[in-house]
Image 1 (tube, rainbow, N blue to C red):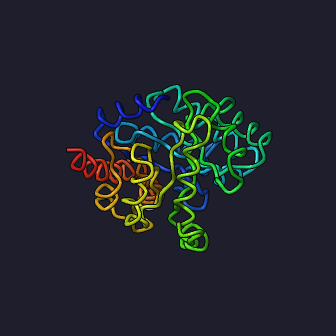
Image 2 (image 1 turned 90 degrees about the vertical axis):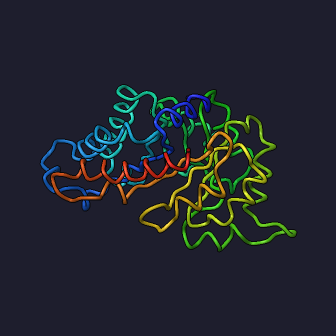
Length: 270
């Protein structure tokens, strides 16, 4: 998917909502455990109920890998279902990969070619040659971890090296990499006060922003400091939407939570 296509969807739906599909069998409604593939059954119901309210879905691959082959099969079925039924929706493999060049190439093939995701999250710590293999894929996007929403982000990401915070050095350096126009960045909603500085460095790039909802991030603050001329934001909510109810009404409850966020976004879009 091209960036222009993503922007068009945002304008059409008046939404820049990304729904995280982080499926925990201990949290999904218990009646689904009787299904042949409870993970996919849960995802399908969530997708069917919310696809008109969001522009992206983000499965965190750890929640599938934890269940071995059956989990990976469920991920495969989920992404295939989205691509076939709702090809206009942007898909994110939240895999946080990043390794030496030939390994990164294989990771990129796995997510971009085999599973046909539009994007994948990547850790920048190993530098250029670990990220450029992902950037080489046309109309695919690499979402680089820049400033994350977890408490431990302050251990390294905001430390000053040679007078500049590390996350700013990551942003600036990444712009010099080949095909850097295919980069997006993860910036946590709980770090909204940093967004103005981030926009000084990457004024037009899309930012994937987790942390709204269960982690306490504020949508209005994120939009105030982070929205670009072409919106440039994908606001992710996972637990706050998909686990809105543990009963048989779980999909309707998820849709209600998603709609509430979508309406807030429509106001921000004007």
